[in-house]
Length: 68
Image (cartoon, rainbow, N blue to C red):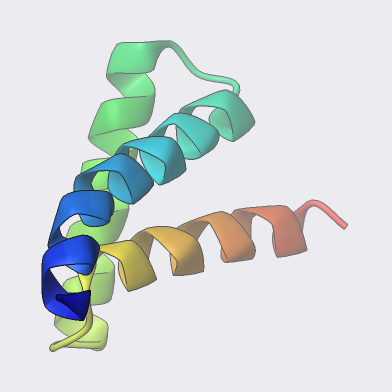
């Protein structure tokens, strides 16, 4: 049952994280999407085996950290 709930909630979480990145990036939606895809590819090569959600959280965390 837990796996089913995670499967159902995961797309919603991923969409929420993507939208958060788009809002934080101060770019047009299209440019932000391209930037996010590039960063995802780099992180997946550097840290293989993590979930899509983890990569998105890492990107957002790094973006917020760099702005402090």
